[in-house]
Length: 165
Image (cartoon, one colour):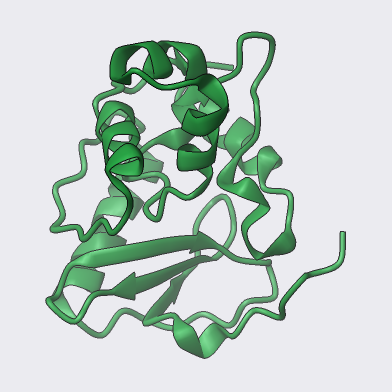
């Protein structure tokens, strides 16, 4: 699928190599993690220059070495009340476990499709492990094809890394 909008790599404050491909990181003006994007393999790497980005890089590396690593980073989450409720539910899913969109919907008084939409808008995948949320009859989607790219293979890779698939 062609990109809908070209990716502007300069918008990322750091671009890290990872086992699943480059990760673009953005830090808020207040020094909190604000965004992690999965980037195409051709993305130019950029080392983290700030304290929070260096710590994010360290913690992401720790996660890729040991999937049960627990993230502890200052994060900025901008979203609707519904999105924030979904992201809170996702953040509580332990490594090695899955939760269905319908279960999250039941817990917060929503519907599975809306939960899926909020999952796709999760600004901090991996840290807020939306890859651990699946459909009733399969994996479901992943990262809402952000940047116009199908990232479902990354969801599979993360679930294999965590020993779920």
